[in-house]
Amino acid sequence: MPRSLKVEVEPAVFKWLRESSGWTKEEVAKRLKTSVGVVEAIEKGEWQPTLRQLKELSNAYKRPLATFLLSEPLPESPMPKDYRMLPGKKDVFDKKTIHAIRKARGLQEIGAELLINVNESIKPQIKSLKISDNPESTALDYREIFNISVVAQRKFKSSYEFFNYLRDAFGEMNILVFQFSMPVEDARGFVLTDENPNVIVVNSADSIEARIFSLMHEFAHVILGETAIDLPDISFITNHKIENWCNLFASEFLLPKKLAKEVFEAERNMLMETITLNKLSRRFKISKGMLSYKMFKLNYISSVIYEEILDRYKPAEPELKLDEKDEKKKGGGIPAEVRCLSEVGNGFISIVADNYDRNFITYTDALNYLSIRTKNFDQVLAKARK
Image 1 (tube, rainbow, N blue to C red):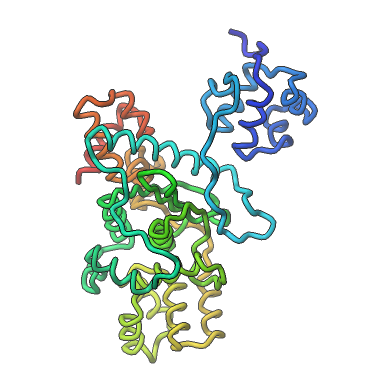
Image 2: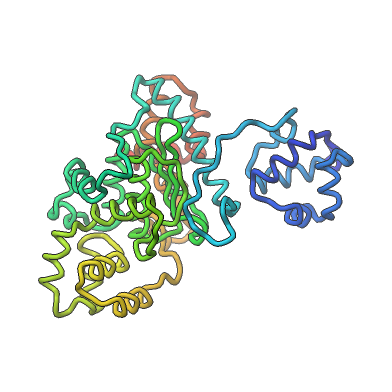
């Protein structure tokens, strides 16, 4: 079939695919190397695109080519509530963020089907709370539920190990945790609670300590039954009641006030020193920003010193993601099995593997659900079962 062949598409479908993927008419025109007038004509039904153009947009939108042949737009779940508080960007998201939300929705639907296949519950095993409940006492309760004692927290060899422990703990509660890359300035995480199983997504482009904070912040949204997208940052003072509740929960979970006071008293004479901040950050697997926030809130440092510490540790560039710093050194980028494990986690991979082992899904289904190739399947399962 000639790539220049014109294809009849429904104008409403063409426009829906563009808008739902976060593309402007100008961006589409540039991608297709045509004019805005041509794009507008297609959306009015006055012009038909070529097969080559549809293939180009299929790649750009990360949508199957067949979606351009629909008779009408498909119904889609609403976007999460926008709690990012970005000036002039209310409900306006980057293309990568939109794709991450769409991908998470797809995996959420797949996860529900696979869990039902093996007679597992899809409802989160948690007690729902309200904004009137105390976030800090709730956080302490969950430290006990997750067996996060001071000793246990310090014993984790790295922040990655701590993150994965928490991720697996959420899996036991029927909460799926995914990591997708988005512009950090656009979103650090989001949560989907309007369908089961509930899904938490954190930004894999963020530092690992920031991801841990985002993970607990988004879990607080799960507790409150919120479907939301935000920019969790303990150093950002907000009057938004829900975001403040989630920040307080995450902060208290990761470094309870009682523990913080004991630690700060022991280090009182060297609290602002880089060596102290580095040591405490490694010990408790939290960012220097959160450490300094606790120092400030507990009156161990002034607001001026707090701001100085924040300036000192402003993020420059995202640190290497996953546990793959060693993999990077070997060259060739991040192996597919490592990327898969990071994105969807042990829990989701195990659900897919269980369904495959019981012949509920085909081998091709399993590959598609995990977005991997045949040669990586056994490696993914091996790593997930370690």
